[in-house]
Image (cartoon, rainbow, N blue to C red; front, side):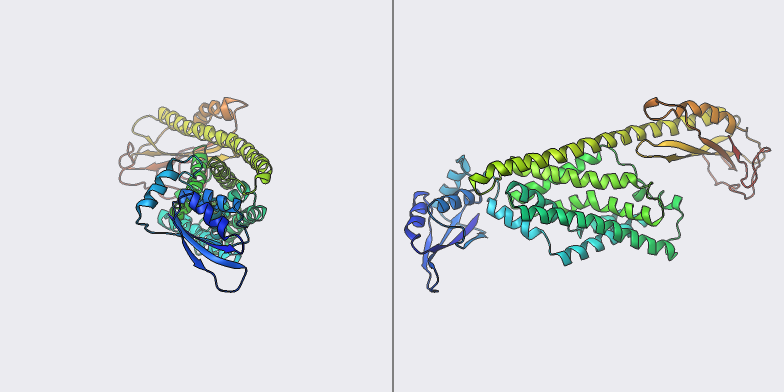
Length: 466
C-alpha cells in the first residue's frame, strides 16, 4: 500500500477534492502557507494497484505534472473503508493488478541506474573477484563476485525507458550496459595478465583452460538461453511488483559476470579464439535479458503517460523487440551448433576409449583418453592422447597406428558431413599395480622410469604417434 501526498496548485483545490470524493478515497487536507503557488497539501492512502488510475483521475481533474506528488510506502492502514477500497480496486479492470504505478516504475528504474563512478568501481571489483574465483576454481568466490555486480539496474533502465517512451532513460541503460561489458573484460584481462606475468599463478595455457570453472564456460549450449531469459523476466517482474530486486540482480550477474571474466582470462593468456564461446555467451545473455525484460514490462501493461505517444512507443517497442528477437534466433542457431558439437565430442571420446580398449590384450587397460579440439562453434578433434596402464614386466601392444585408422571415420565434421579430419593419435604407457583400475599409482610417465614401447618415439616413454 502507498501513502500519496499531492501539493494542490491555486484554483485546483475543488477539482482535486471532488475527484477523490468520487473515488471514495479518504484524505487529509492541510493548508499550504509557504506563499508559493500551492494552496494545500492532500494526503491519502491507496492500495498499490490504485495509485496509477487515481493519479490519472487527478490529472484529468486539472492537476498538472509540475505539481509535486510524493508516493511513499505505507506499512499498515487500519480502516474498514480502506479494506473496501482494496477490494474494489482488486476487482476493478481499470486497476493495475499486481504491478506498481508507471511513475513508480520509472522512478525505481532511474534509482537503480547507479552513478557513473560507483558503477565503474563496482564493475571493476566484481570482474577482478570473478577472475580470481575462476582461477582458484572456487564457486563461492565466483558467487561473491555476482553479489556486488551492478548489472540489473542498466538492463531494467533500458527496458523501462522503452515502454514508457523515455529516451534519456533508455540511452543511459544501453550506455551503462556497453560500458559494463567493456570494463569487465578489460579489468579481468588486466588482472589475469598481472597474475600470469607476475608468476603469481604460473599456469600454462592448457592448465588454465582445464580449470573446471573456466572450462564449463568455453562452449555454451542452448541451456544458457533459458537462464538469461529467465533472469530478464524475473528482473522485470520484481521491478514491476515493487519487491526487492537484490536476489534477481545476483541471477542476472550470474549470466554475465563469469563469462566476461573468462574472456579476459583468454586475452591474458593469448588465446582469444579459445574463449570465443564465452564471448558469444556474454552477447547472448545481454540480448536475452533485455528482450525478456522488455517483453514482460509491455505485457504487464506499462505504456507512456500521454495517449498521443502511445503509437510511437508501441512502434519503438515492437522494433526493438524484433531486433533483439532476431539476434536471439541467430545466436540460438550458433548455440544449437555448439550443443550438437558437444554431443558429438562426447560420442567421439567414448568411441576413442572403446576402440583403444578393444585393441589391447592381456592385462593392459585404458586409463585415460584426452582429446584436444579446435575450431568454434563446431569443434573438431585435432589430437587424441590415450594413457594405457599395464602391469610391471609386461609389454603392451602398439595400438597408435591402428587406433588412428579406426578413429578416422569418427571425425567427418559436424553432423557427420565433410571429409574425415586428420587427428594426431599418441599412446602413453605407464606401469601400474592394477591396470584395470589404475590403482597404486603410475610409475612410468613422461620420461621417468617405466616400460618402454620398442618403437616408442624419443622424448616420451612408451609413446607412439599415428
